[in-house]
Image (cartoon, rainbow, N blue to C red; front, top):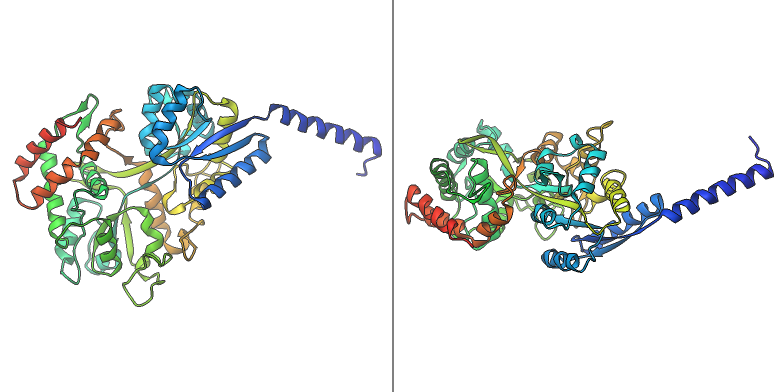
Length: 450
């Protein structure tokens, strides 16, 4: 249909009125992010620009070093100058909500608008409180038990989903120095050992904290943990071991199993020159990736449901926010802009929101198409089969950390940071005392942590 001059004029006036209405309602919000590397900042600034184009709201993206985040947020809260939205790690969600830094009603409204059942339950549960949710889960990763699936298949072994299966595989595959059954963390002053041990304790349902704070470890279940860990340590090379030896020995083909973060996924496939697989003469080979399997949910004999050790990140809408605009930004970042959010670092940003009500697998499927790697790029879906992709993402359904469900994460963090568990487990491995005496020592040491 051909518009006459009058119709064109009226259409122009209507558009101008619409744009002026958007401009009149537009707000400027501030967004603190701990993703401060230049390439990652650029992606977030592009998303902010796209959001501004869609809504009229402008977003100032402000990088904050993660180690400074707690003190900066506390100071800004005292000054009444909090940003509108903060991208933050798990440990701040519930304490900040209790302190009044976060607007839990706003976060809960966003989650309900997007659909609670579209989020990974574990990621939601970690931020749940009596009033709803402290923050909106954005992304996360779960620690993985990485294993030589080809060797397991050749030996007729079940995947290492349980203590028993791991020990059966150690018995079958341990043949040092050509093949170590495991490379367990034993360097007590490394945070890596703390993470691995927490994962193994969680797998058997053991925690040093409960609803009222520190509580004694269950003796029988803790003895199972200690005996298991001693067995995998004895199937490891001698010395003080941490992430470096774990990766090196697995990459050279001399380890059947290790525990590692998902940041190993691109390296396994030869996409990072600084950490190439050396299983053959081609540092860009994908052969090791093809021969690898992973387990995220791992179970001990006293906890058959198992657990996954998870690190989740959240969007917190603050109590000083321009609430409506902040909520719009978070919803956009978790919906239309979610691909950009995950693309910041896909190997460490598993989608905690799997999809929408209409397309439940939309974001999981999208994530598998995002490029990972440093010196070379490829989508995870090209490197690993669908069953492995499903296992990677599925860990977030059951992701746990000590103290989260009991509201005692801060107490648990003090225990972990003291490294008393690392030290006493290592002494047990080295034969300084038996398992029952070690449990008693652990309870005494944990109770004295301030």
